[in-house]
Image (cartoon, rainbow, N blue to C red; front, side):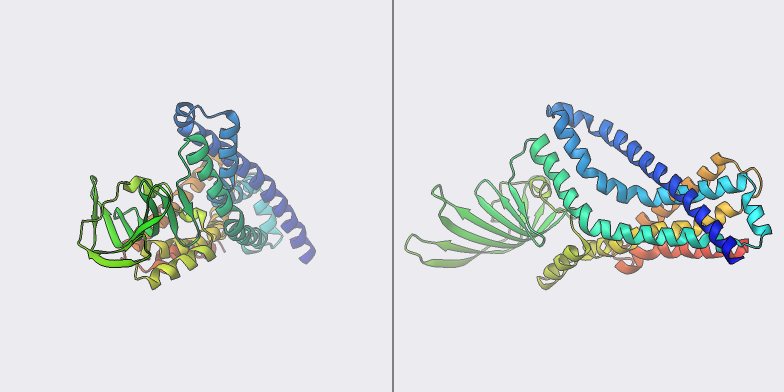
Length: 362
């Protein structure tokens, strides 16, 4: 019996991997086609060469792989087991005493490996490639000057009257936190430093909090004095700063955690970052959770299952997962749910659904 289970496991693994690779490549191809036509107007308007377009999409492929892998895993599970059911092989396996749980073991093991690999992929390849495709998009395709210099912990921006150092750009509240302005003269000599705790963009200009200004004289003397609220003149707009803001996919889990620690020490609200931090751990394991749910769903098919029906089940389940994930993430960003709970809610819900379905099949 053990040797029979081993043969079945190898057979299931081959069936799953063949479909998974094919589906993953198909999803990436479809993603590329949709993204290409979505960006075609920008490419044509900026006279982007085919080489530049190819560089942009090549650097974006790692992020695409991350985003479509859970759906590809679920589709491969449903189609591989659906095909077995269509050929009455699941009935034959059960007649041999091989339960659905035993058939699920190799698929769950593969899904766990894929989840861990996705986590490592997101930590290493995706942040680097995301920064590269953003650079190609802004500098090489749109031909905007490289005015922003970003590190893992802060933003440096070359503005009209000098340099800006920014701790955090809050796009949801149209606010920048920890703004330090270094104003220089035509000979590149530092004239003054202005420290602005917060500045909010109202659509027309900046509403600044009370600030501190340090003026540097030619003799080397430093004069410090306060600046009243809304008296700091900033010619740049919020969009200028948003152009150089780090996106979550450009930071690894370690980088983002360090960023949160830095902002927390400065008293800046890091709630949105906290949700993104936990999502970096939760989302890669969507492959495992969806497999746990997909196996009993496909196992319910007994005779001559409809492939369209199997695909429909997969699309509905995958769509529902991402809806729950987005809803919980929004509640986490708004402070209704704690960040860890918001990030892991979808995994927890679908894990329970999968276990219930398993118990119903056994």
